[in-house]
Image 1 (cartoon, rainbow, N blue to C red):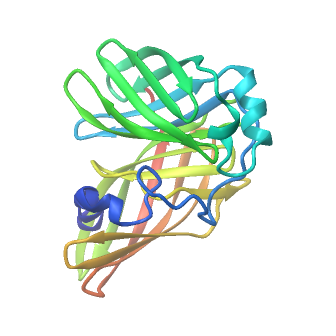
Image 2 (image 1 turned 45 degrees about the vertical axis):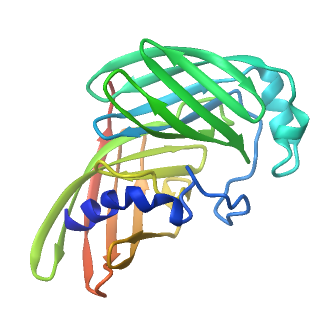
Image 3 (image 1 turned 120 degrees about the vertical axis):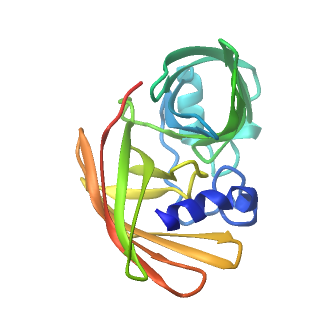
Length: 249
C-alpha cells in the first residue's frame, strides 16, 4: 500500500512530529489518564522485528504512578526497582527479560535483547537492540491487569484509480491503541470506547509534505476491522478498508 509505505519511510523524520516515542510534548490531548497498573503492554518495532511487550512493575510503582500529578512520577519514585517483561515476537517465539526501573529510566535485557526507555504520563517508550535488529518500543498502562491484544492486519484501497494494499500492526488495551504501518514507526496513540475506535487522525511529515491518516473501526477479542483514508502530500486522496486478527508468536 503506497500510503503506508510512505508513512514507514518517514521514520527518519519521526522526531519532527508528535510521535509518542520521541515527542517532548507531555500534554497531548489524546494522552490517557494515569491509572494504577502493574502491567504495561506495548509494541516493539524494528526493521525486521514486530513484537508485543508486556512489562511487569512492582505494586509500589502502580500506586505511585496513579497518584502522581502529570509529569511528576520521576520526582516521586526514587529507589531502583526490579522489573520483568515478556517479549512475544511475531513468528519468533517469546523471550523473558529482566531489569530495573530507576525513575524515570527503565532497562531490560535477556537473550541478546536490550531495552532502554523512560516513563512519562503512564507511557514507557524508548529504543532496543536485538541479536540482529534495532528499533523502538512503546508500552501503555493496562490498569485492568489483562494483557493488551496484538492484531496483525492488511489494508486494501484505491488511490488515483489504482489498487493499493499493505500490512500493519495494531495493539489495543484499556481503552488505548497504537498503530504501526508495515515496517514503520509507531504512530500517535488513539483511544477507543467499548468496541469502537474513537475519532482518530494522525499527521506524519514526509518528503514532499504532510500525510494525514484517518482511521475508523471496531475491535473484538479475536479481530479488528474498519475503514481508512489518507490525504497525501500532493493533496490526492486514498480510501479503503482494513482487517486484522489477533496474532501471536
